[in-house]
Length: 383
Ligand SMILES: *Cc1c(COP(=O)(O)O)cnc(C)c1O
Image (cartoon, rainbow, N blue to C red; front, side):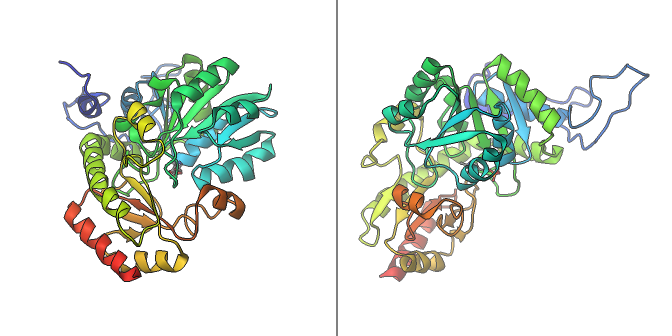
């Protein structure tokens, strides 16, 4: 059987029928330990922080989707990021994107700096800025693309070139695109990270993180860190991910189709000052998006001009739910300044364009006519 297509892999890799019973769904191994036959003799399963088959199958699945050699699951996206940063040691320096998920910035800025790591944030669209920030201590280039919430893109091939030249690791947070639309390991990254809370989980019912790599040495070290530091997920969340990922392809297609219908409507509406969506030909990096992504995703940010307009708009929506997070089947609307990006300093937010009037839409997979009606009504409420 050919198993090369993305949707086929999502449904079959790591999701083979159970050997013992033939169950077509991977069993949930909700156990902490395993019976051993005699001292020193067991089936390769000793303790569930180290070995859990439900988790292993999900890690194998995601690694295949990202075209990596190994995957490692964690209790949240931030636990995944924190564990990846444990590849570094005191004295190491990281060049990071200035426009990232607020929680990642907070982890780096408020916690990891206490352990002797240092960070320089740069505009990852600017190759010279990246090069200028690199020092002899730089061990990692860390980026996110498209970024949250400004939808800026990093040219992953360009960053990979710089990383190779300087012998640094390259890490990409691929949460917004999902492996369905973008595979950073195939473009030169060493490590790809997901908050599986978002599109991979896809149903707003779990918090989970996962990492994939195509580098043997990094895989060995991550496996050690995952077990030694212990930020693993529970097996049920892995089981939910295995179930969710089976529909990732169809969900992503629909997220994108809905976003591609909504974005141009927003772009032509007089109440909206700016629309940030890489699928619009007016997006400054639309061509790059076409080159390195196979689709534009379901996230759109809009500038409404003021906090008052943002409040009126979000209050008037009824199909879109006001809330943090993204990537679920249900449409969500978020106000980054007061929600996800509260921990980013004001000057930094202003520089990036994260204003009081900025609103982020996670376009769900409901009927697009209903989503449009909802948006039209909410825009009318601003006027
Ligand atoms: C949500 C998010 C994270 C953090 O993941 P959690 O699962 O909430 O810990 C990291 N990166 C991006 C881009 C995110 O959207």
